[in-house]
Image 1 (cartoon, one colour):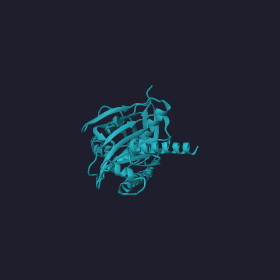
Image 2 (image 1 turned 90 degrees about the vertical axis):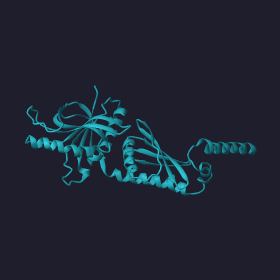
Image 3 (image 1 turned 60 degrees about the horizontal axis):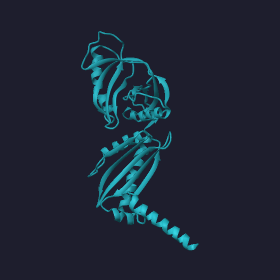
Image 4 (image 1 turned 120 degrees about the vertical axis):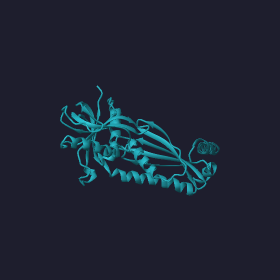
Length: 302
């Protein structure tokens, strides 16, 4: 009986060692949870990467409806470290961030050492995960989003500037730049702005973060405007949509888009994933950004 138990234990140990040395491709892993959607996590991660001092980096990405996976490579001392990140939705309010670290220059050495010693590689792995957790924790205090509801997009007739070369990160800067064209139009027509602006997204490619949009101000419908610059006139039609209310700086209002897309997928609602944003606060008023209100709509396809 004892021999049989020892035999089973030995087989188990061999299986475990075989899995660890030959089947598990990474050396160390860290995970934590956050309230952000995977898409919002990815965008904030991108902002952090723009400020990083990485010497050698590759970027590969594979996206899924409720998960985002990508890898990057860092040089750290004599190590070439690959980090495989995964941002995955756990439930309606929680996402899991996982990071798997592999040292390609010291593969077998790390396999032997990591389970027993907190070396430079392990410390690097922990610091990168803590860095990302800190960024997301801080970011979580910068905005609030409501629950998704069904609503009606309010109809507006607008004067707009069309932007064709924006990204999700440059959206707000492009709005500020083209706002001058709209201001010149209003001055030329001796027109006082009476309604808040809106953004009508005409193209959104999350794979490249490319955006095309019309930045607009509602105006009375008439035919005798003096047209200054590349002003276009359009009607935003009233139609059924999924709506979410975003509180925070308009620069990051796109964090709410992913919540609408996720809700639509979960509820089986077919939408046009092209947001329309209505802004209700003047950014120059000095009001706390967390009180700024953006109503975000995505039309329901019927």
